[in-house]
Length: 400
Ligand SMILES: Nc1ncnc2c1ncn2[C@@H]1O[C@H](COP(=O)(O)OP(=O)(O)OP(=O)(O)O)[C@@H](O)[C@H]1O
Ligand SMILES: [Mg+2]
Image (cartoon, rainbow, N blue to C red; front, side, top):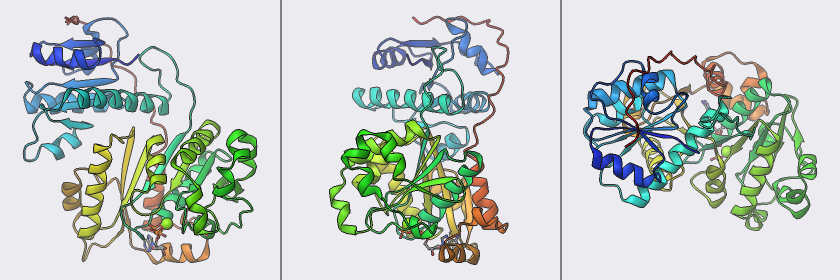
């Protein structure tokens, strides 16, 4: 069962959260917040560790950001939500403090309940990815991580990022990484990896493979890097036969068999992409440094949030960055309300690698673009679980 902790001195707010989570709530009401966030967890019982911490509007911004930063440093798997009206500078400060979402105090009850449920699921996914025990002390089943690479615009570098990421992950998990080309009409993963697939996604969603995962596995194409690929259909016309439900089932099958399922997509939010995003543990957004690209990315982030498609991990890659003409990294981050996690500069080596069908990380290219694509791969290495600071367990503010 998920665990929620609310930090608030406002009983009405605590009751509201309690109603939204069906009473499964712990509550910290002491005005003095501990420097050691572990002390917060001793509110009701030993060994308690929340999935979601909700910071109430009655906390000062400074207190909220301080406790959020401390939680983020010691327990990055916990989802921290700040309930507060948006004001100038707050989204960026909240993002830097590791707050996952800013929630309007006037949010309607149903939306609030859904948001808390998603926040708990995201925390559980992060816990599973980090190999930590969940709130009930159980290790979760080992479903692979599903990493969807997306962009609102064509040509932003999705396939470049997806293929390099998949090759990089395959180096750490050979035979356990699969790349799926969900650009169903014009996918070019096969070309980018120099593969000549006998079977493609059209066959992979057919009855035989959908029923039997061994059949599905036999439809994958092996790449010399240790990666498997499921390439897009040969003919754009085949796309119309593939439904969102097919994609959901396919991804679930693959995630049950492989540690990493990397998904390349077409531009925008097609039904296939949305189906994949819904199963994803990670969204990798790819955008450029020009104004339309950054605005498009912002819109895409907003839409997914409105749709409730907020995964455990989000990564923003600014590709083809051009320091002379493009927006500055700071302007991009302010517009997006999200950090630019990886910045890949324009590089002729990338273009050459696409044309040759050998991803940079396969060729071992060491220019800045190659180094920064490697930096993206490193973001997926599971964090070393941090040891929990010993709690002095002085405060016991049991749930009221
Ligand atoms: N950092 C970069 N430097 C130089 N060229 C790049 C860079 N990133 C991508 N490219 C080139 O831009 C072109 C488009 O890249 P890519 O195919 O990865 O984009 P995409 O988003 O997948 O496009 P589509 O929407 O058509 O699928 C390719 O020729 C690729 O080599
Ligand atoms: Mg592409």
